[in-house]
Image (cartoon, rainbow, N blue to C red; front, side):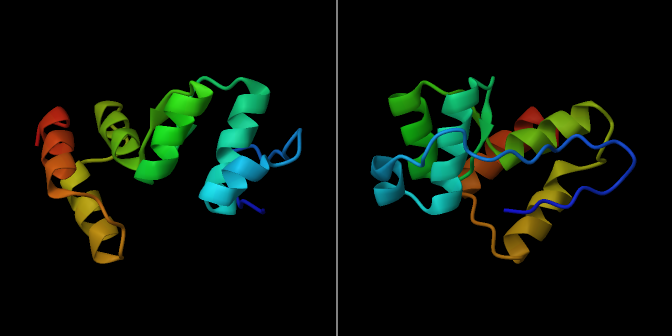
Length: 114
């Protein structure tokens, strides 16, 4: 996996798995989500960013990980003055094919004060 970081501050760090990818995880999730959960478990991270419902459930229940999603990141970005509106960004994401339920959108917009 290769991640390109833009800007002067490099806040994304690319890490390889410290242990082999669990066959159980690989059997029920795609390699990206399985790798995120495996690495988070290996390095004892504070939280993971996962949007897919099944992977979120597995991360929480089987690995005890704290999970946040993209929508939560947007709310936090707005609170910190990094974005003006969450709604516009969610609309753009949805238009590009990102699936997020209407009930989640409404809850997130309420939390963002929109």
